[in-house]
Image (cartoon, rainbow, N blue to C red; front, side, top):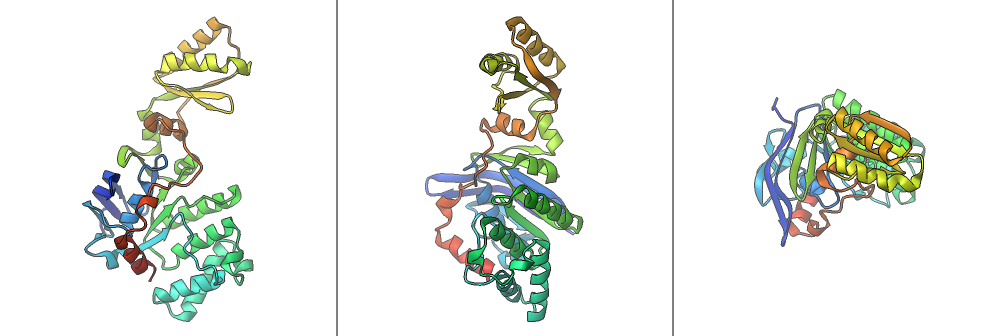
Length: 336
């Protein structure tokens, strides 16, 4: 068995004058989840497209299961399941027909393809709607069908690009359970997400990408320690004093706090900083209804590393490159 289920080293990808990847290194061991975080336009989707053989890197190398994604692309694709940001299902076919067709394209006998389709439809809560055309599915149902489609071939490596978009909280929890089941069975997952709690809940390791470069990498706990051992959070009794409290926190911490529904939070060096904030608030006569010292959240890590608040939208950093002939040809091979 290879040490890494997939590995990218020094990936560079340009689209005209735009450099989407500027020397990216990524790797995950078998049966683990690598979470990839970054603001919109950071290069997350481009990295997935290179690793899944849908785009050729301008520089660097990438392997899946030990197969080079350029020189041994066909072998690498046999190991890969991919759920992208855009739906790849056929609107005119039913949910079951979509999965059966994919199974047959993957050389399953028709009876095996039907059995696999029914199994996945049940796992994703789509059995009752299996006979309906995909065009009649809601956004969340289409997303679940996309996820099911990526698993038809029982891939050993699954790339999930913003998989939770369009899912309600209950279905998101179901997805998390399925990802955990996959890794328990030995599948390796690369997950890009804008839901920071999702990365915290699922990822064994996290890579933060910004402007086409990996700017931080480690376990969730390690990343939280990188930006500050702890964080101070508070809510002022008088919302009009929130701005003044924020300036105090910025002076002590050296960076502006996050403001989420009037709760201010900022990473600090330790309890001495927390006491300094508390003393300054008392001197200013700013009363608080909440005050805590805790490990920073991944939201705070994300903001501290990138200077950008996490978005709930999709990462469109690769729209600039999806029209190239090379990418189109690779996409046809991947789906066939």
